[in-house]
Length: 157
Image (tube, rainbow, N blue to C red; front, side):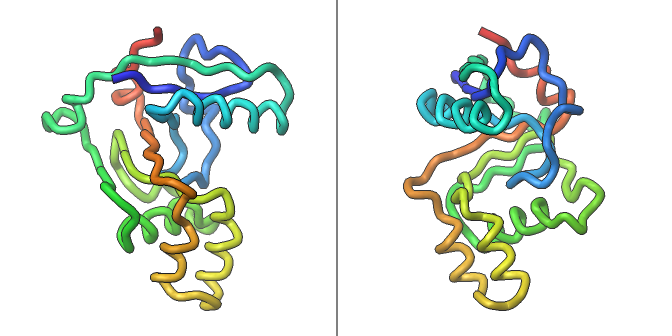
């Protein structure tokens, strides 16, 4: 399968040390199967940091999601388990990595995630409301690669 990563630069080598913490599935390298979505992320990155929008393309053998060679977590839809996972990963009080997965696949949370997590953590909304509020406009899946072992499976195109 082809996966795409939007950035403000071409990425010659994936460096997990440059990844930002407190993202949906933790500190790691994020990709999508939708080229247009990666381009939107690249444009967003350019607005923040400058540069030129660039979509990095990779080939990934998806059999690694199911063959037992990698520690993989797949969220097939928005769920309470997915929401708790995102809450834990985005919690800035968690200084350590909260999971040991090489790869996580699941829905992207809506861009307003910070506001919704603030509301949930202060008991302004309940879990069903949080899940509803975190749903992206349309179901879009993200692929998280969080270990060197996982990143080596991505072949740059």
